[in-house]
Length: 82
Image 1 (tube, one colour):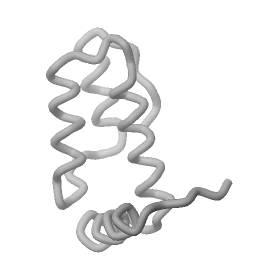
Image 2 (cartoon, one colour; image 1 turned 90 degrees about the vertical axis):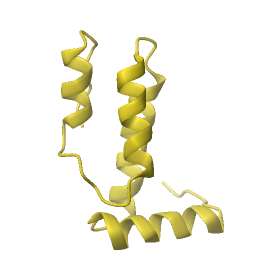
Image 3 (tube, helix red, strand yellow; image 1 turned 180 degrees about the vertical axis):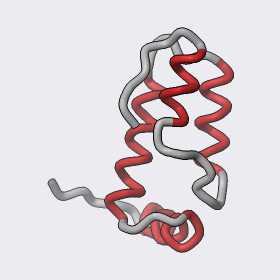
Image 4 (tube, helix red, strand yellow; image 1 turned 30 degrees about the vertical axis):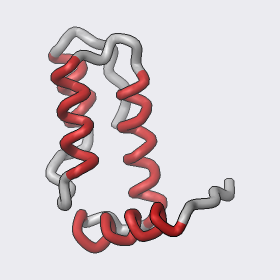
């Protein structure tokens, strides 16, 4: 699959790799898609949405794999693999 990104998006991904501990551009994009998928769930509550938005703004990757799935499960929502 080939994806075209704007210059701004390319810089954003490069910054995430430098500051967030990502090993590849693909890793950044995969995590962004997981976050987007969680945000798109119909039953996403305010606590989950706030956590997702915070993670997108944070300079460092502070969440362990499965963090958002665990949060969604704790709130009685369907979890997806992270």
